[in-house]
Each structure stands twice: as C-alpha cells, then as structure tokens.
Length: 599
Image (cartoon, rainbow, N blue to C red; front, side):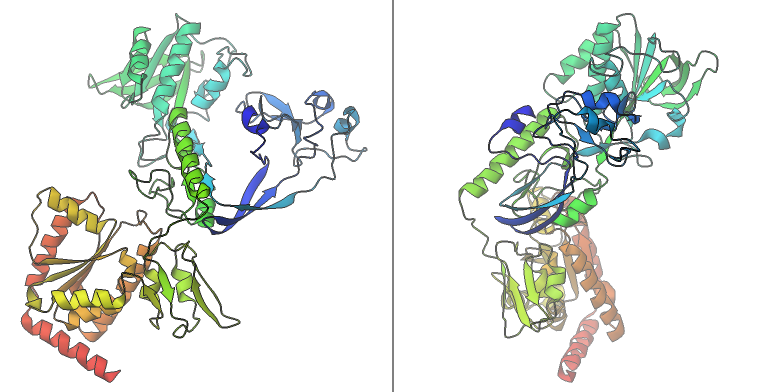
C-alpha cells in the first residue's frame, strides 16, 4: 500500500465511494463521492498528539472491538495516507463549549471542521472491480454459543489476539479470566457448506488459515492441546499439504465431524463440545478452554448496488460472474470491466494477486491499442421504422441504446457497448432493429428450410450459442444418444428468439418447438434470458386463447456442461412430438393462416 500511495501515476482516493458509472468501454464517466476527512492529509504528520486530548472512546474496528480508539484516529497501522481521520458521527464537534480539544492540541493546524464532502468526476477507459468480500456473522448459529459464551471467539478475533501488533501483543488469553488457555478447539466451516445457515459453497481460505493458526499456537505454546473439528480439509494449494502434515506432526488432533452443540461449565467457564466423529461413528464429548469459530466468507452487502451500477452478472452464491470460466476468467460480461480478488469468488492472497495481475494486463492491453475491435453481430436501427417507444432501451442489458422521447429522436445503438444478444430486435414492435448476421430473414429462411420436407417429423430447436448449443455439442462428443429428428437453429442468445419465429414454425407445420438457453444467473448477456421467459409466457397465453396446446412450445435452460440434460430434454421432446397428430398440426396451420388473413 505504501508503494501504491507513493507511485506518481497512481491516485488513491480514500474515504471514497463510486456512486455512478456511465458510458462504455474506453469512455466511462465515473462519479466518486469523497467524504470529508476533517484532517488535512497533506499537512498531518501522524504525531498522535491530537488523540491524547480526545475524550471520545470507541471500539476499534480493526481489532474487532477487542481494544479502543478515539474519535480521531488512524484506521490501522501503515494506513495510506499516513494521516489521522475524524469520524464526524462520533466527534463532539469543534464548538469550544463542547469540545474542540484536538484542534487546540494540533500545532500545525491540520484539523478543519469546515471541510465538506465533495463529488469527483473521472473519465476512465476501463474499470477493475476489486470490492472484496464480507465475513460471515456467526450470531445466528446459536448452537455454538458465540453470543452467550465469552470464551467462544471468531477466527478474525483470534487473528488479532495472536498478532504481535494486536491488543494483547500476541498473547492468547481467555476473556473470562485473562489467562492463556491450556486447550483450544477450532470449528471449521462456520457459515460455509451449509444450505440453511451461511452459504452452500466452500469459502476456500478457512482450512489453511486454521492450519496456519495451529502451527503458530504450537510454536508459542508447545504444550497446548489443540483440536480441529472439520468436514473436509481443503489443502489443495502449493505446499498446503505439507503444512497440514506438519500441523498433525506437531500434535494437533484433527477430528472429522462438526459439534452439534457447545455447553459451558458455569464454574470454570470451560466449554464442552458434543460431536459425532464420522471416522469412528461414535458420539464424543471434548473439553476446551477456548473455542475458535473458523468463519466463512460471503459477498459484500453492497454487491447488489455495484452489480446494477456496472450491469454485472452474479452467481447463485452472490459473487460476480466472469464472462467465461476458462477463456475470460477475469472479464465481466460488460466490455471494459474486469474482476480482481474475492469480489469474483473466495480466494487467498496468492490467487488474488494473480487475478489482479491478469486484470491489469487485460486492461492495459485494451487501453494501449487506443481502439477496440468489436464483433460484427451488433444491432442497427432503421430510424424510419423507429416509433421512439423506448422498449429497446428498457430491455438492453448493456445500456447500449439511447433515444430521446421528448424530441422524437430515434433509437441509436452504441456499437462499442453492444454485445449482440438480439433481445432488442426480438422485442421491437415495429421490426426497426436488425441484428447483423442473425437477421430475421436469415433465421426465417432456416425455419423454412428445416420444415420444407416432412415437417411433422422434425423437432425444431432454438439454441443459444453459449450454453444450450454448446451443450448439444458436448452431448455429441460424449457419444450421448438423442433423437435424430432434432434440428438446431443457433442464436447468440435465447433473447433473440422473436415470437414471430415461433408462429412461423407452427405455420410451416412444426409439431413441437423448443427454445433453450442459459440458466438464470448464468446468462452470458446478463439478464437477457429473463426477457425470453416473459416472451414465451405471453406466447403460451396466446396459444391457450387460440386453442393450441401450450405443451407444444417448450422452454428449457441447459448449460454448456449439461450434455446429459440436453440428451434427456431431446428425448422428452420426441415423446411430446409423438402425441401431436397430423390433424392437430393441420388445424394449427389453418387457424394461424386465418388469424393472419384477419389482420
């Protein structure tokens, strides 16, 4: 951090929050809200005299509340910039009748209670999202007694205790009697790998953090009895298995099973853990003078706001979703925005640094060229047909379309921001939008060609390029069998499937039609498949009104890795096709033809 703070080409904005990001790759307009420090960071020498006279005492967040600080303080050692900051919500103010003692103590006059928050406007070419993660709050896991027993602490609190710069100068003490415990138990996966409390995913860092802590304990307290209760030890990194074996070699006991409950001895304040040892299938009781809850991690509470501001995707766990797990592991679906660190998924320092280096390289590669090459599958607007209704602006996942309703200025597509999902073209009521290389004429020609001969024997399937089409390919290379009557029409996204394509297929005699795409949360075009769902639901209602069986139109979500699912869905479609009679197909054709003539 010190090197970053001193770098002549790096500008660090502390006490700042990004409130708005507009624009597109190479031309982002960023608004930053910088809070008032109330201390001139350029003049402050961090002498600390001001804190001596401050009467306000508050819990120190950096030490997890295990020590105190004043209302004027440095957040943590080696903070950048090396200057004090005043918390205006805690400070008594500059009115000399009330306080103002820090201002009087500061000989350099660095404290300015008239300092105001300000807005900073930045013009940037790329954005790297490195917002980090939050730690799980164990208060809801009452079975571990974190809120009831003083000698049950979290791994974060333990880290501050064992740190030489912590509140106890590196000495481990019990909170009840201020002495070093003779035995410590670590409980793993607190807030992780649980479908009920916390997250269902592995938090990645907890196991090796505990292994490190046990080694430190054995180094400082060789006679201490240390036990670790776990589900599985994830020691998958370079050198991690050696550390794990070294920990066991030092006498640390690893017990496979998580305690069901913890009870406290009211006299000694020792803790009794009841656990089923899954290695021996026996119910055991273990005594410990201190218990450490190894906390999992979770996405930041404000991740949703960042997601909406930058039009990002998230996984079902709430972490940001990369554009492609193998080919673009640090890119977001929005061009010019990259990920680094635990914002994308839980990871340790090494992986975070690796990903940060990759994100920086991707950003540099983009900006050094001075211009970008875009795919030729972008949307174009026929201004003569555009009625300035604004539907395209509403459905675009990338905010790539602009128009002015008040001045009747037609829609315009920013090709640098457009990713070619085609949702706008499918939703446009006047057919004013054309998708290059996936035009209406091209797709309708494919429908006509497929259904030209023996249409009653065909299973017409619209497949999105990234997921269901790739799933079909995976089924093929995996030698999975599925009906030969399946005919695929590739689109970049299921959002491109216009309702008129489906009606045209039924007009041409298709017995069944399948629209397939990415699972919700996995869409490569952020939320375009949500519009697919809404469009299909409208068609189902229309089919029911016309007397056409809605089962003949199916909507399925199939990922690129789900070859088995693709095969199963196609077999189900073949069974459904077998229930459609030739008379039903002809009735549908006549009905739709009558509807068309009526219009």
